[in-house]
Length: 566
Picture 1: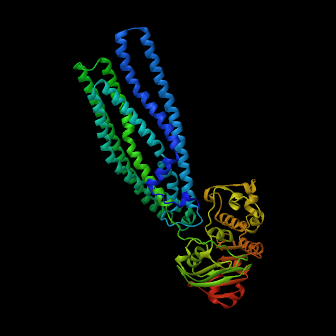
Picture 2: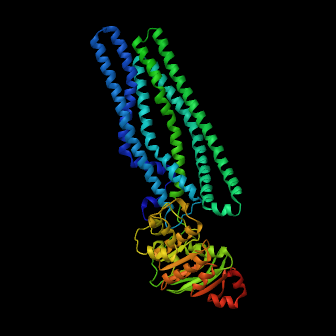
């Protein structure tokens, strides 16, 4: 979190400069090797011209042998320089892409939320596709320079035969690049829009996967599919636009390169016909005219890749330069575990005030589900302290004055939709690998039947998002993870909505027993959990309206009875 690389603003151009600066050594080596490759490729038609020239004069086996040996050296140089040059550049490219993927992921996983209007699917797209395309700049620059070497060598060789041929190559190359540089700007803008739309489609898929079971439950899957189809269609249309622009760019580049090659060949033929160049020089010129199309093609494509890399870097900058929504303080909570909410107004909360003393098990029955969600968001510091009225105190200190790391160590808020990760039961329950309270957490959450059901036990493999678990099993696994963390203050939000009544009763007793002496707050409408709590607070219309034990409230509060009775 204090890494200066993550705190320093990184607009797109700065990201590209950072990537280039970090790979100077690899790029120099790659440029030398790829320049050698292009020089050797250019030397091939030059050598052919010289062979024709001298063989026609000498007509000796010795000259023929030297010529064959020279061609062998050139071919070997071409093969080895390309092989090792691309190996160096692709290794640097892959490594740099990895660095940016890790950097984007680190920003997304910071304990302090950042002010960026991107969904998880969009950030995933930035951390993968955009990181790869940004790192392509590592290959683009050496290939650009090596292509320039090839064009320069060809221009010099042709100038030695006739100055007009060299000038034709230079002028033609400048003209081609000028035209394509203008076209590449449109490619960059179109690509950036395409990446944004694809990212939005990915985010929509992620949202649909999370809510797939509920959607099937109330028949909303067809409407959800229609919503995704519209987003995906937008992405498809933009992809077609980008493909069309790329096609026009590639076609224009190929046509201009062909025109230049034809112009060089025709000019050389005319000069040979006029007797101003020899047959050997004509062979060299025609060979160079054919060969020069490859480096010209590569050279003309580089502006496009530069614009794509810059567009991707600008998208990465959205994440890397996003500022935190709050600036945490330096303090730590006092020992003890008291939790105090004083006059908090946020969303549906209209001045909620209550205190959970150290070691107490308190339940909150929220008549409006949104109020429970808003309270959980405030306690989890998903809402910046300056974004709501009132004060939240943890361990006697205002949460705004505490470092976010100390808040996370001291206070754990487990959401009702806790994420399940690909891995095993064990790694989901104990991500840090301490293994101190796994068994107790498994028993308290009634996850024992899932562990016993599989021969691998806690090492049973879990698919992404818990796809091979039922809704109740995923919920109990999430609860086991929260209990295993053994936080000083634990807040549970609807931890048993997907389990049956008998299991819910056992979980309520087990949680109360396991958390005895530790501060626990449960936001729930479950009678079992409400009954297991030391006291129950009623949250109605954003304020605490009643406080007593569950049984006393059932006996004396008709509204409470209607709200929680099942």
